[in-house]
Image (cartoon, rainbow, N blue to C red; front, side, top):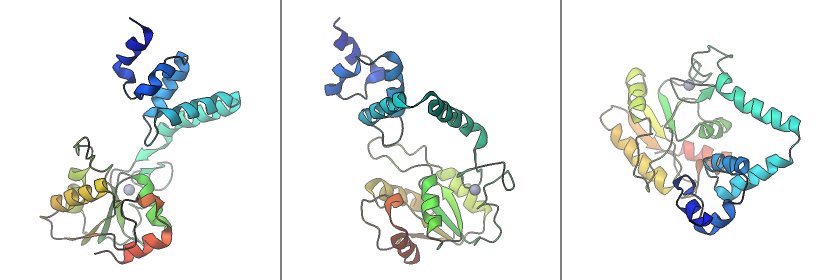
Length: 224
Ligand SMILES: [Zn+2]
């Protein structure tokens, strides 16, 4: 069997676009392995992954060591908060939950549902919101029709345990975000709480993380 055929039939490499398959098999194994790993990162395709690997090749041995040490240490030094599912450093604060969840000065009646951890930082930067958060863990993928990775049940449990009066669904106004907002709204319909979403100003189709703080602040204040 010609080599390109065996490569094309290898399902492990099925994400490589057809036109680049002939080129991809020429990389040495160690390079190809890293390309495969980087390709699994969010928003990174095989082309960007390849650029990452060649960037790494140019780094000094010390820089490579620092990078691999930081990756190694990540799992040991970071925990997932069992209350909001944000990541936190357990060596600070209570060590059990994140700084926000253990902050008694926050508004216990407000819960903001976000897609991912970085959205929390984006909203905190506005200094407008003083309630609590819940990281949903993604949005509905319209292609895969898969919502089982979303923490809907965990969200319900948090609402049942808390004294929340309002849940703000702060998801990006993209097609996936809109579909997820509907799902969250429907899932929480039986609770006696008001469910709001971010208001005007956010560009339709845009990701929350790219919204500037002023626009996000106005969207938070005009939620409905
Ligand atoms: Zn937390």
